[in-house]
Image (cartoon, rainbow, N blue to C red; front, side, top):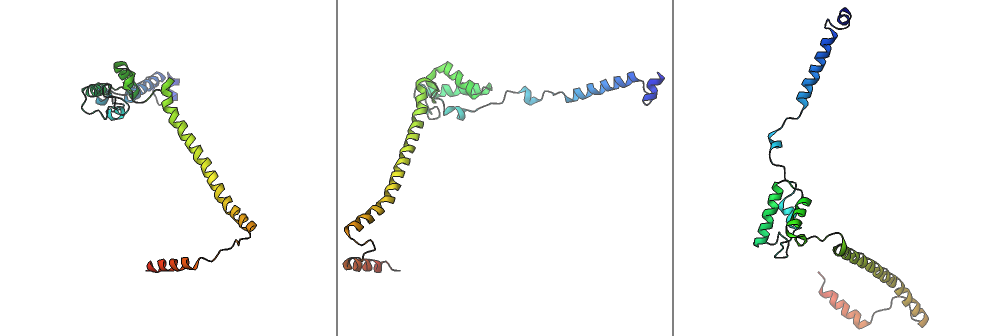
Length: 185
């Protein structure tokens, strides 16, 4: 016992161990999360009706749910979506529940397999094709505008015409001067 007291400040080793264990227990108790009123409430909604209504159709009207304002079926779908949101469901879970309840026709966005895949690919292919066609047309147009003056100059040289600027017709020059005189400020 004297050896244990000689190392410390007069407290035996077994008491140091007991103090350390008590300190760890107290620290663990304070660090443990305590349930707060927010944790015992309903789960936070992970989505909202406006976020889902543009991707869901009214199965009777055939229009997006956000546009079907007074249809009873649209109101029933909205109420069902609100209930699922209140349960804390995610957007994908709500869509899956809607498909289970109303069928595939409830989704406004086409799927990503089979024939529905064409709804995504056709516009993309059309855009790329149009961009390619515009690029080719611009190259041809630029090439034609660059070579056209050179071709005209070569034709004039062959026919013996002057390639310099020609004097305008005196009558045209007089009309031009008259027109310009009217617009002077």
